[in-house]
Every structure is written in structure tokens, then in C-alpha cells.
Length: 316
Image (cartoon, rainbow, N blue to C red; front, side):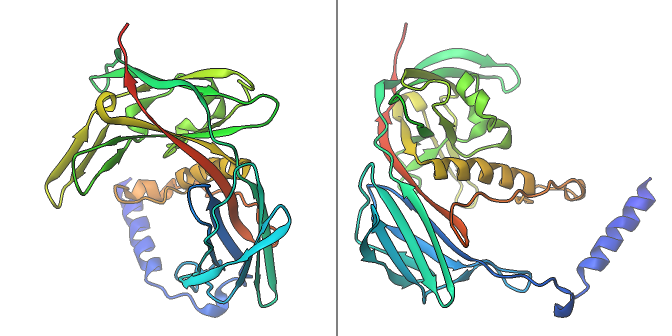
């Protein structure tokens, strides 16, 4: 069987060296896009440009557009460009307020809406109990991290959790946890169905706990926050129960849907080939269409509201 595989590899190499003539490429109508996530802690920043086809190297950034910001249907600012397709305003969004972005360029007009959510509320400070669980495969002990969310009743709410720890290192002051140091047993997160797609954060809705003070449990390694800087021979490590934090976000529905589809898109497209083999190339998944709430274009206009909480360790 090794000879057919060898021939296939040779053919792939040969095909990769063939130039594709422009007249053989499919016609592609470029679409205008905008990308912006509002937060009450930051001024408004918007990325504007056009999608690319096979002739281009990446997105086409646009500096000649007109970007107008509305608050509750009233114009409050025309954004200025600072280059690279970036437009900024000095305005910081307000909580529980609707914003509309409208972008004009030549014959193209795109627009999108989002409402900035209220601050997330917790019933009690996040607590960490260690050790409570032993992973035989990794030969490591884990602990229970409890995050109690006080969810407002009667409205759809969406949340995101990011775990990180502070360090004493000047270069790497913050070290974020990734999926391999977290175990999921919580029913709300299992119901979301995202964990098998290697998400970079934890996002979920209040579908199963509307109006409750919900005590979410994550099983987390205390030593999961570390960075190895191979080039500089630097090792940064810290403990969750000593310097760990929970960044809890209220997020808009647009942000929630975007994160869910983006996570699946990245997982399916297997865009990181740093450790791939030839067999990974053959079994690559189909990328998914991304979520967009931009009318007449693509991209996402969403909003978040964040609060930071120090993790407390407790014993029985």
C-alpha cells in the first residue's frame, strides 16, 4: 500500500507547483465587512474592509468609508479613521442601550445593531476547593472551582467565562487557562455542546437557569496556568488558588452566536497545521459559514460587559 500513497504525495506536490490562470478563477463578488465589539470600559473601535478572493492576500482594508454611530436611533458620532481600516470614536457605550453602526463606501451600505448588556452579577465570590479529583490519565490532581451567577429573570441572558492567573514575570503578567486544564461536568455547559470543539473560553446561555442564582462548577488544575518560552528559555508558572481570577462577562446574543460558530469553524477547518501530518490533510473538515448580523455585508457587531473576580480558596 505504500506505493499508491507515495504516488499521491508526488501528485500533490506537482499540483501545488502549477500556477492557476486568473481566467480560470471563479467570479467572486467582494462584500463589505465590519467588525466591532462594544464594551462600556472602552471607546468604540470598528474594523472596515472588503472580503478577499483567491487573487488577494487577506482582507482588503478600507480607509475611505464613512462610519456613523447611532444611540437609540439618534446619530451621536461620525468615526475617524486611524489607518489599516480602523475607525475610532471617543465615546464609551452605555449599559442597556442600543447602538447601530452604519457604514458607507461608494455604492455599498452596511449596518448592524447591538444592545450593550448589563453588568454580570454574582451571588458569592468564586471559590476553589483543592484537591477533589484525580485524573489517572494525566496523573494530576484537580480542584472544584465554583462560580455563582445571579441571573436576572424573564430575559435571555448570555455569559462568557475566562480563567487566568497573574504572575511575577514582567513579560508574561497574565497567563490564561486553556481547555486541557479544565474538565466539564456541569449540566449547563454540557447542554451547550461546545466543549468538544476546543473553545478558547467558556460561553453559555441562561436557558436552564433563568432567574436563578446558579452555582456553576468547573474542575480545574491548579497548575494549568503556565507558559514555556522556548526561545528565551523562560518558564512562567502560577497557581490558581494563589493568584487566579475569573473574568465573567455578560455578552450580547450576537457575540454568543458568533463565538459558537467561530469555535466550530476553527475546529472544522483545522487551520493550525504546525503539528499536522499528510493524513491530517486528507481528512480536513469542511469550514462552516460564519455567523453575521451585518445587513448587506458580513462581519459582526456585538457587545460585552465584564467584571473581574479574585478566586478564593476554601476548605471543608
